[in-house]
Length: 253
Image (cartoon, one colour):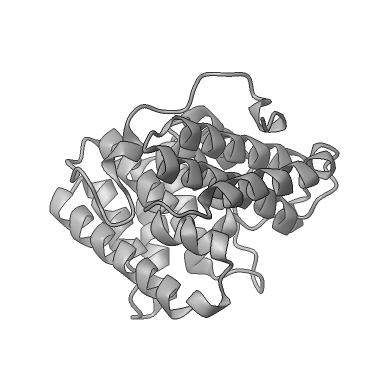
């Protein structure tokens, strides 16, 4: 997984995040810019994992991403939010920091941004937020899954059986659905490789934060999981983000 360019990618990612930091601190960013800031932290964390084969910095960077996005959501207009694009939610869950994930969930938009995002993208993230962070009853979760199925109109979406498996605590279905989810993700990266930035191909192209977060949630449910999955190495799940104040995202040393 190593690359001679990884140290450069990590340094550049942190430099790019620092460039955006003052605007984010002043709440003078769009969601796209907030997501860009978070993606730089994600790349720096994954790159460091690949260079060191230890997860501590990965967990820290993912936690910082989640904290920063929670900060953005608290100050953003509802119409500026798109829950289906809230990838830093997965960063926080993957880091094992459920308090930060709860902050993201609490301030996320509760309705899809029609014309701006696919409803199935919204429903996937909203289900996970409701189920694991917002204390929704089983009936509410069932309604979200039923709506997800309706929106698909017969089309396939691996995320739906993944959510169903988590709700039902079905280990076999979860394993099959996560495996398919990760394979589809790999295929998408390969198909679009020519248009991807090298630093993204070298980091997110070989590591799935969403997959890591889903494994964390399965463990939380008591669902048995494999030691490793495609682009979700077991070492990444060892431990969790360090306990620190809510402003860790402001300190990008």
